[in-house]
Amino acid sequence: MLVSELSVVIMDTTSHSRRSLHPTGRILTAQVVRLMDGYPREVRVGQPVLVVVLAAAGVVGLLAKLVRALLSAGSGTGRRKFKELKKGPEFLVTPIRLRDADGRTYEVELHGHLPQSALHPADHVQLTLRDQGDPDLAPKIERIVNLTTGQLLRPRTATMWSHLGPPLLLQAALGGLLLAALAACATLT
Image (cartoon, one colour):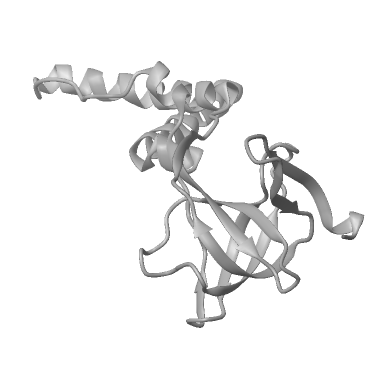
């Protein structure tokens, strides 16, 4: 066993045998042994970014409320609360066990969703991996080439920007432009 190929050996305390390794290389070619049960993990939303987006969107929101009040357009919108937006979206994490040609078992994480028929036990795959920065976490899959079926797969997860949503981001952009225009007018006078 080469030390350069292994980063962490996870021990199964009930049987005192090696369960799996975390690969350290960027590319891993192996056979899928098992797709384990997935669990949710939350995407972190940076509070400073959220405050800037909401402040800029608030400018346009105030103007829209003023126009609605003048036109008696009816009730307000169902805007999400700051606490909801700060929490962030959840995405599915599916641990996957793989076995390479030398018989070593590895564990990696698949973040997001793939089509149900995309990956099965016994499929031969080539994975492009990325370290997650935490030695306790298995590497994250960025790309899968299923050598058995010939499919190229890229798992997708929710991002901070998809969580905030296009309407809020558009409103924030308009608010930022409005504030910039007001600042430009103030410097001219």
